[in-house]
Amino acid sequence: MSARLHEFKDGAALAEALADRVSAALADAVAARGKATIAVSGGSTPKAFFKSLSTRDIDWAKVTITLVDERFVPADNPRSNHLLVAENLLQGKAQAAHFLPLYRQADSADEAAKIVSRDADALGAPFDVVILGMGTDGHTASFFPGGSNLATAISAETPRGVITMEAEGAGETRLTFTFASLQDARLLVLHIEGQGKKDVLAAAEGDGPETDMPIRAVLRRAATPVDIYWAP
Ligand SMILES: O=C(O)[C@H](O)[C@@H](O)[C@H](O)[C@H](O)COP(=O)(O)O
Image 1 (tube, rainbow, N blue to C red):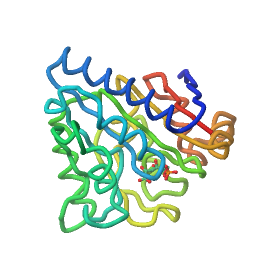
Image 2: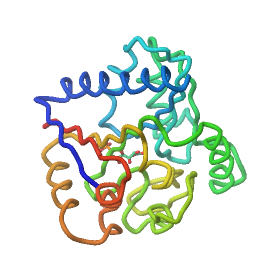
Image 3: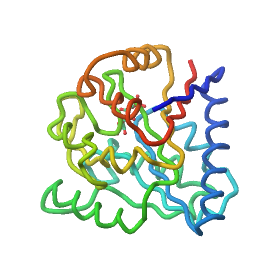
C-alpha cells in the first residue's frame, strides 16, 4: 500500500498540522455518522500533538478515544499510556470525549484483553483515526520483534480485537489491538520524529521479513494509505 510523507520544520509545526488534520477527520465522522473513534499511541512522541488536538473545537462528546496499545499497568502508573492521554489529550475542550481504556483489573492480561475486545466491538469498525508510532527497532503498536504473539498480531487472518504481547523490548506485558483492527482506519497516520527514526523507516521500507520490523506489515499491507508525519 502507498504511503505519503508529510515533513515539517519542527515538532511544533507537525503537532499543529496533525491536530488540524485529525480534528477535521473526527468532525467529518461525527457529521457523517453521529460519532467518531480514534486510537492513539503512547510513548514520548505524541505529547505535543495531544496538547494541540485537545484545543480543537469539535463535538468531543461524540468522540471516543482509545489506545492502540497499553502497558498492563493501572492508570496511576507513570508507564501508563492512559495516564499520558489523560494528562495531555483529555484536557481543555477534549475533556468531553469518552475514553476507552485498555487496562482492566482482571485475573490476567489475557482476561483483560478479552474484556476490552468486547468493549471495542461496540465502538464499531473501522476506526475513524489511528495514530501509530514507531520504535527504533521497527515496532509499532505493541508489535515488537520477537514478541510472544507477534505472528498472530500481524496476521491478516487474526480478527479485530485486543491481544496480549510479551517482548524483551516492551517492558511490562502489553495489550495491543491487532493489525486487523488498525489497518483500515479511515485516516491512518504514522507519527515519527527525529533523523534516527527516519533512517529506521527507510530500512523498514526496504526488503526483509515483517517480523524483523513489524511496521512493515502496515507499510506493505494496510488497506488505508499511510500518512507519515515526520519532523527532525
Ligand atoms: O506504548 C508505546 O510505547 C507505544 O504505543 C509505542 O508503540 C510507541 O508508539 C513507540 O514505542 C514509539 O515510542 P516513542 O514515541 O516514545 O519513541
